[in-house]
Image (cartoon, rainbow, N blue to C red):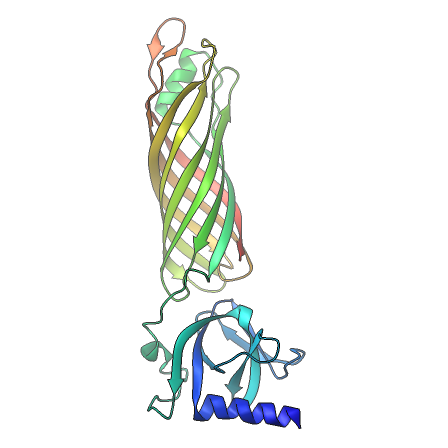
Amino acid sequence: MKSIIVIMLALFCLNSLAARVATVTTSKAVVFADKELTSPLGYIRFGKKVRVSDNPIGVKDIYAVIVSGRVAYIQTKDLSLSDEVVSEVSGHQKINEHNVDELFKDDIDKLSENNFLTLTYGQMALGPQWEELTTAYNDTLASATVMSLALEHRPPNKPMAFAIGLNYLSAEQEKLAVKTVGLDVYLFYSLLFNSTFSIDLVGQLSGSGDIQFTDPNAEDFNRGLYLGGGVGGQIRLFPASQWGFVGGLKMMKFKVFDTEPFNTGSEEMVLNSLDGVHMYLGVSYKL
């Protein structure tokens, strides 16, 4: 008897009175025939709009949805819920595959949803000035290791995304070394996006108030600051899933300020820029 009442109420809410609009935010949101989520009926792809019940069912982690005239259930974690309520009584047409894009193209994106943590590891060349300094010290040239952690916001069905994070850059040579922790701001634009992979253009701004150089002819670190950024591209695997993978390449350029000249023994040399190609691989996790 309880099951019949629930089905009748859900049908009444969805078909007769009001329903909420939701966007699928996982690569495949599974639709179940029962509230215990034991009988999957199929799935809805990332970015699709669906009508769900105005209120959650039971323990508040599932919503009712109509599939071919019958009540089914979908998990809250797979959805981004809109504040908009649609009502057929007030004249709204039924939502279906053919008109969802036109009806809901102005949905508001929420910053609290569709967020990812991305951890990357890569190598970066430090540029011609660093090479000249290495040669002057008769040192062995090495590229820098760059590790970064970023919080990224990716709205569904929109090509733009952004992120903010931290990076740790270090290069250890026999005589010279450099290390710093910097702040990063990223902007992404997807040229191609689907549930399997995406191709993105990447823009990045970076800066640090403390970059430290080891000078073998000085008693202490040669310290300064840097400001710069880069542009490039990246490929993401499974960009809408709980776990994803990323690989990319960027051309980076940093301006270095407030450092002392390096004493090579025969002359003093000033280092005021670091630039080179940054290649990286990483993993992302949806929060």
